[in-house]
Amino acid sequence: MKKLLRYFCFSLLLMVIACTPRQGLKAPPVYEGLSPEDISLKIDNDIDMLKAITEISVEKNKEPYDFINASVLVKKPGWVHMRMYKFGMLVKDIVIKDDMVYVLAGKSSDRLKQLAREFYNAIIWWDILKDGLIYTDEDEFIIRTDNKQLHLDRKTLLPVKQQIKVMDEIIQLSYSAPVETDGFWYPSVINISAGEFTFSVTLKKIIKNPVLGEFDFQTPSES
Image 1 (cartoon, rainbow, N blue to C red):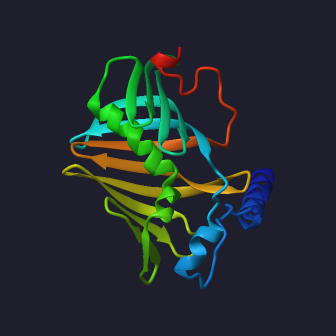
Image 2 (cartoon, rainbow, N blue to C red):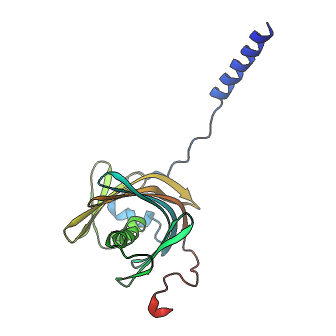
Image 3 (cartoon, one colour):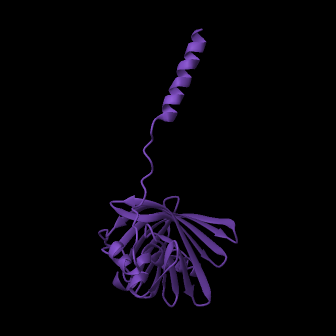
């Protein structure tokens, strides 16, 4: 009888837990009836620089190839400072500034240089707005320039995917898992496909307009 009573109480507890309302995941704000002209007014344009703490999984020809952690600074107009770590140790340090690429630490790699360049396009994706032509379809706004095409969700104004033409290569970017930090919504997962490589980037933390450190964006000519 005691066992039966304990079983009944345990079952009742499970039912109470199952029926207790859970706080749902916070969803990004939804905008209704926006015109193309409204986009730039709604998107957060007070950001000149972002710092992203990331995890990057690399595949080559759809096979696991590498895994790195990275701290990435992106700053208008097109500057990138990317520090890559393995087991907590700095293995690569790349600065892109005024269209010049500086490899400050680690071996030079054209593919990783390209990844560093694409971080700017991936993270400060709204920079395309000032030069792009905007179209609409049923679910998306589509912004096009000579070498880029960006798709935004019409309700949330968050990026869905982007295509970038670099020479004869097409870089494909897709965005998912939006999260919010201090009122700023951003996709926390970005997949970048470039040739035989795919980079799956998880943004663990984003900081708006951070204070620069002494060595951020420093190049050999400035040291």
